[in-house]
Image (cartoon, rainbow, N blue to C red; front, top):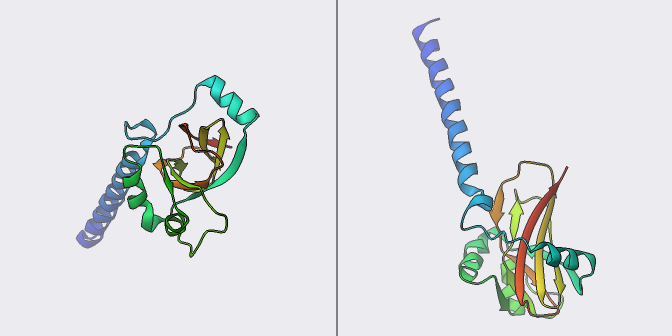
Length: 164
C-alpha cells in the first residue's frame, strides 16, 4: 500500500469513528427519558386504568412546529399546561387559523423519534397526554403539543409507548 492510500484509509477510519461517537453523544444527550428534565410523568396505576378504560373526553393532540418549539418549551418551563387563544394555537401549529373554537391548551408531551401520534384523554380534569409509535429503541424528546379540551386540566400525566 502506498503512503497516500494508507493515509486515506486511516483518515476514513478515523472519520467513521468520530461520526459514530458524535452520533452516540447526540442520541444520549437528546434522550430525555432518563433525565431530570424529562416531561414523562406516568399516572399511578389506578388513574391510568380509569383514564384509558372510560375517559370523559378523547381527542388528538398536535405537535408544535419545529420553528415554534423553543418558544413553546419556554412557556412550559415551570408549568405542565397553558391555556392559549385561537391565534396563538394556530401560530404554534403553523396554520392561518384554527377550525374549532377554543379553549386550546399548550401541553407538555414526549415523543419518540418524532414518528407517531399524540392523543389526549381526560377524566374529571385529570389529563393524560399520550404518544404512541411503532418500533423499538426510540429516543425520547420533550415536545409541546396543542389540544382542544372540554375541561381545564387539573392534573397532567405524560406517557409515550412503542408497539412492535
